[in-house]
Length: 113
Ligand SMILES: *[C@@H]1O[C@H](CO)[C@@H](O)[C@H](O)[C@H]1NC(C)=O
Image 1 (spheres, helix red, strand yellow):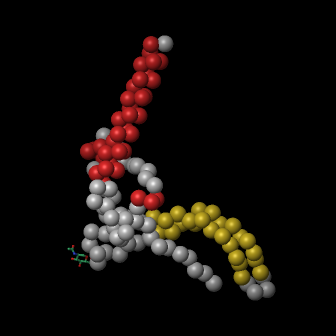
Image 2 (image 1 turned 180 degrees about the horizontal axis):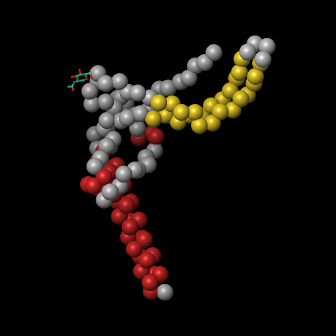
Image 3 (image 1 turned 90 degrees about the horizontal axis):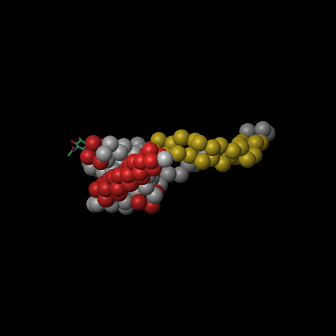
């Protein structure tokens, strides 16, 4: 019983530590973050956006006209020069989740024929 309480206590402490580490990371990397500006340190550098389809649904297929109409969800990845930290400065935390509204995001749209 005592041992179980003890491990619950350790678990709570670890959770608390990693939560406050995440908050510290967010405070640190978003301090001077400007989400309206493309996140490159050197403006001559291109931001490469990679797009991966994660869900594809065929809505309509017309063999006579050789057309297909579909809807698609996709995942995008890119590098943000400003959102980086050294995990060893934050108790080894390597990943955090933040709301999309906090970030610069690309104005991607897909067009097909
Ligand atoms: C910025 O990037 C360009 C193209 O890669 C390079 O020629 C230039 O030296 C870079 N400027 C700085 C300040 O790093």
